[in-house]
Image (cartoon, rainbow, N blue to C red; front, side, top):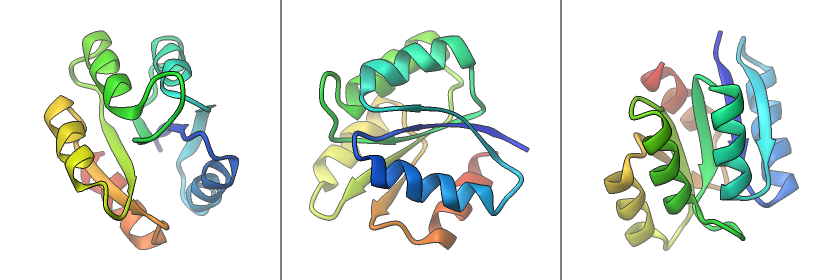
Length: 118
């Protein structure tokens, strides 16, 4: 169905999201460890959707959302946040993220967010 780019500095979180996606028809188009890699991979791969952490080294998720939206204003991005990051979530939504999911991930919430955007 959809090609999805996962961006999170924690390998465990990328693996968790990959496992959730493997239960569906969606595929992982690529994985990034920071926002800069996410932007570069987005430019190269043009995935249908991006699931991205807010807090990452080199370039955070908010900056990466802005950069991806400059490349493609129609990009669909879901931001991941930990509890207590509400201010950053609001900033990410204002930057162009379409939805957010809270860590630790609930599989149904992840799949609902993906379905809503696609």
